Amino acid sequence: MPKQAPKKRKIIVPPGEFIKKSPRFAKLSATQTHWWRGLVGYQVYVLSFADSNGDGIGDLNGITEKLEYIKWLGVDIVWVNPFFESPGYDHGYDVSDYLSINPKHGTMQDFERLVEQTHALEMAFVLDIVPNHTSSQHRWFQESKSSLDNPKRDWYIWKDPGPDGGPPNNWVAHFGGPAWTFDPGTGQYYCHLFLPEQPDLNWRNPQVQAAFDEILEFWCDKGVDGFRVDVAHAMIKHPDFPDNPKIAEPTEQMGARAVFNCFEHKYDLDQDEIPDVFRNWRKTVAPYDAMLLAEIHITQGNRFTRFTGDEVMDLAFHLPPMWSDWNPAKLISEIVDLCEHAPGRVSWVLSNHDGGRPVSRFGGGDLGLRRAFAVTTAMFALRGVPFIFQGEELGLPNAVIGKRDLADPLATRNKHGEGDSRDVCRAHMPWEAGVTNGFTTAKTPWLKSQPRPFELTVAGQRWGGRGRSGVQSGGNGRRSVGQPPKSGEESVLAPLAAYRSLIQLRKDYPEVWHAPLNVESPQPEVLLADRGNLKLVANLSAEPFETDLGLPAKVLFSSSSVSGRKEGQLERDGSVVVPPETSVIFEFAAQ
Image 1: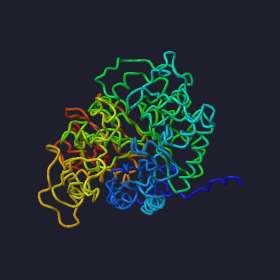
Image 2: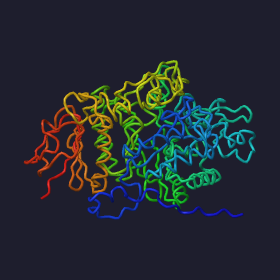
Image 3: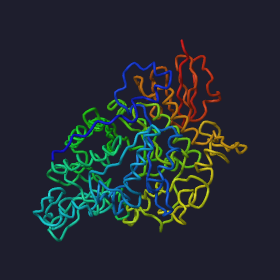
């Protein structure tokens, strides 16, 4: 029986629907052609978000139970990390069946209910797909390794040993060791840029591409609105497999990430043919109007833009800010470059499941919180689609995890890998006070960590108690609420309230993401952005920054306070001083 063409679904989130509710919608001069423009995304790490059955592991039903909170926060897109069938060597990114749900996380019925409820709350659902590699337990790889002449042999990357009998070249894996593992049964090495249990697929094989077309259609038919594509920049390797140039000498004291960075990844990453894969994907998902969002580890704007556009990926993440320590000049330089090369096609992120929390990376405590929210405010004032990672809205620092409790293979499989561990951002979401912070009723969650204090929980910041605050209050960057609020009243000074207000700003003022954008950097650590009737002044330097706005303006939003002036006060002469490490969005007075 011939395969039926997929049916075109209704767009669950109508283009700009939330904007149409605002009188400012009338100011938009162009028709909205992409439903995702102007939206804000929220990343859920399924293992650690909410456990509904008390086994210590986050699950799909747990996410469904917490959708009200995500909706209340104001976001429009829910991206959930992989929950496919998987042995779990890389916590779900080693997929053994792309069409099945891991029983640890639930059933297909649970998934369908989650998508249905997400849509009922007028949010879009984005699925995390892992196409660069599979699990070594996937039936495709089991067939591929069974013999040299198996029909699926060429579905993976196999090479004869090098002249010395060792690996075919000097490529190293992200998670430590060579990027090649020898298979004694067939006498060849297979390529894996991550764990040996994660063999890389051969995307030069049309059969692999056809198999993934069916996978994408399967999940689109299940109702997903888009795909976040894992390590999209690695899916094709150089056909000759030459050695990568070495730029530093690895030492035994280095962790896996440091060793990986000793090489220029000229031949194993970012090959010119990769966007062609996504041109085919675009044709596959076009009948569903599904969004494609790439994870690409690329910093140069001219290389970044190859992945985005109407014929390839809708959006791509800008990832360097989520791995770096406080380096405002570098951060601003990269933002300016991307605004020039990929306007409106960037998904801005400050954290996700692969890096330490920005509050800790940017100095810790009040200082780290102030810096993190200043950068977030600047990113929210740019075109594109910003995402926040679960718990980021609470101002969470890194979790405290004992060495014996580490679970990330970057740490557990490398002698000096403790500092590389991603577990610090993967600890459970703190919902309330208690040993497991309301994540589970089990005695111990899958990843054991020290409990968060009440002021760093959703309950502490949403409903009452001593709210951790001051993102907009000035002073030392934080103060506690003097009296517990009345029942049902929010702790309005908590980071949670500040993030919620910032998200709402993009809905109330579509100029923030829609109007033509002009960016400049008058100083290395200062970013200015003009759009419509608004102006962003992001002063990430350690000194106050004085500028002349040119026209009377009021403070529409501030990541802290504006040099002794109350928020909303008109600057009659157009002159303003923005405090250190603060971002402010101004609205010019009507003429």
